Structures are given as structure tokens and as C-alpha cells.
Image (cartoon, rainbow, N blue to C red):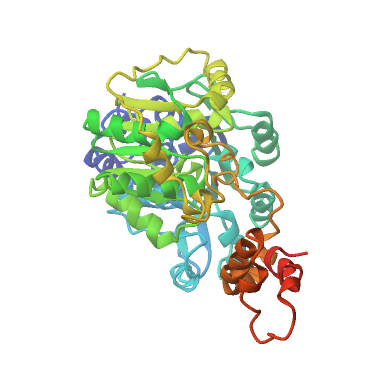
Length: 494
């Protein structure tokens, strides 16, 4: 089967061939004819199966039959013919890029809108009217509220990664967008799975849809070689560096569970001679875009990401994915490792599993119905205790020389990584009875000013030589024997 046999014009067939593909994937061979027929569509397919081309190519064919502009259609200011909704900025940019790649020779106007950047350039791009608008729901609703875009004439709606939009809490925004659309339209829904929530949404959104399911639910791509390494949390960063260095891996995507964890891992790798950058929700859009562009261009060896990047990152020929921490939701494992092994290629996925993640691993193996092979740690030397202590954040180690907030020797390895589930911050090491942070700041000036005098006075008292103690500042007339009682509240609080 060829793309031409699916009903696409020569211009689009040439555009696809220019990207290196001549044979359609299973999802493309089923979806393209259904879209061209004008049917609503409900598709369950894993990432990396070519589903973006599965809707982009037939949509372009419908907008520009046989590669020519529709002479009966004229663009109207602010109006949109095709609307594609995506859950993340990265996916929106990827889908928009695909439309531009396949329709590069067509007289097409497109735009991509999402939050995190200025709205004015996006409003200007929409103003003349568009053939295709790719958008994240939140920014799109903002533009609708400002009357910068008119959705009343949308002919085709695409919900891409619909299950992810539901997971991220966008369902209400999606419903608000759909309420702005005409009832007479073609709707296409793409999802990794046919969950109950997705089926319920499809029943309300789609009209007698064609159902396409090209892979069994929640299975991993067979071409991905998967390994797990059982290792303590405190040794994970060193193991990541060892695997990348020992295997001479040149392009690696690493997933962490938290933003702070992504930053710390990227900094650690960078300090150890492995160029890395982190992307997550706290990074500016320009920083995320640059890091991803450098990674794709092989200018950056390692990209460390939270699950914001687990869907929609189309990185050509990505060979390696590492799960620094297992995801809390088993289904996200499939989406993470689906970044490799795309479009028929092979790939490798490594997961580092600490003792407290064993249950998560069992959940993943139960869902994917496979036992993941365990990798060998031969040749890996865990870092020494001193190195682990030096890697800990300053707040966890305590101020040098204060005698407090420091762990006993040997405690670091046992406790390294504990308490890092939700916010990836090490467990606090406050001494018992320590006051809240605000009270500590209030008491600190008194402590700094009088600490030496009071310490000296106590030494004299212990030796039975009270007369040698220095008098309090500015009040030498009072007996020195009363000083400890007056100074104690200023030192330790009430």
C-alpha cells in the first residue's frame, strides 16, 4: 500500500516522501480514507505510530483538493476552518510543524497558540483568517474572550491526545471550546487508550464515528528493549552518568517525577562532563523551546524532563530513554518509553528502581503483561559516602561548624532520597524544639550579638568565677548574676 493509493494528491505524496516515508503505518492506512470520506473518527494508538500524519494529511487534502486552493472558499478575518486542540505547548508546536511540513507547497495559512508567551503576536497571526489553528485550550479560550478568534465556522475539529487532556484537568476547557463550535462539523478524536472517560467524551462529541484501534490497550512497543536496574535512590544519579558514559550514548531523554528533581539531575550531569538541560512547567517557553531544539539537533546530549514531555515530543530516531524515577501512574510508563522506537525503529528504555518503587514496577508489569528484564550493575561503583553528603543540598546539610542539622556518619546512604515523592526536597533536619522559620529570623540578631558574651559568662559560672563575666552592653549597673535569666529568652525564644 502507498500514500497515493489512500487518495492523497501527488503534491502531498511528494511531501511525505521528502520526510523519508513511503509506506503508510497501520493507523494512517485506516484513518486517512475515513477522514477523506468525511466521517467522525475515534482512534486509539500509541505515540510513535504516525497518527499526526494520519489526520494532518487528509485534512490538507480536504482543504486543498488535488493540491490546489478551493476557489469557492475565501478566508474571513479571525475565522478558522480547522481547529486542533492539544494538551501541551510542545505537542502543539509539533503538530503545527507537521502541517507546515506536509503543506509547505500549499497556499495555506496556519497558526499555533499556547500560554507562556505573549498573546499579541498570536492575535495578529489569527487576524487575517486561518486554514488551520493548533491550540492549547486555555490560551484559546483567552483569545475567544478577547474576540480575537471566531470559531463559529470551524469545519473540522481534532482532539489530539484526548486522554492526556482529561488527565491534566482540561475537560471543562475542552467543553467550553466545543460549545463555541458549529454542530455541523467533522470531529476526530485521538487517544492512547479507549478508557471509560474517553468513551464517554466520544459519545457526546462524535457522530457515528469510525473506530480504529491499531494496538492492544496499554501495550508497549515491541521494538523497545526494556531494562530495570535496582538501585538505592542515593545512587541513581551516579548510575545515570555511568550508563551514559559506559554505553557512549549520544542522545538520551531522562524522565524525573518532579521539577526540582529534573533541575538537580541536569546540574549533576553537567558538572560531571555530560551536557544536560532540564525542561518542565517552571521553565520559560523560550528556554524549553531552545533546549528541545538543541537536543533534536544533537547540540545537547541529555534532556531531563518531567511528564510534561511524555507526550507529543517527536524526536526523530531517539535511541535512549531513562526513567530516573518510575511514574506514579502505570500508563505514563508507556507514553514515556514511547519517545523511542518510533516509526518502526528500535530503541532502548532503562528504568532505575529504588526499593520504595517496587510496587510501581509491579503495577507497570501487570498493565503491560510482561516481565521487564533486569540489567546488570557490573562495572558500576556506587559513590562514596563523602560524595553523597557533598551532593546533598545545603539546607539539608546545615551550616558548617554549627554542630546542628548535620547527619551522623553513615546516615546519608540510608536516608538519601527519602521524602522526595511530592516536591523532591530532602527531609528537613531541624533539631527538636526548633522554632518556626519566622521566629528563627526574629531571634537571629540577638543570637549573633550576644552569643559570645553569654558563652563566656557560662564558662565563668561553671568555674565559680562570676565576677569575671562581662557586663551587658549599655547597662553595667545591674548585677551580673541576673544576666543569664535575662539573656535566655532572646537566645532561644519563648
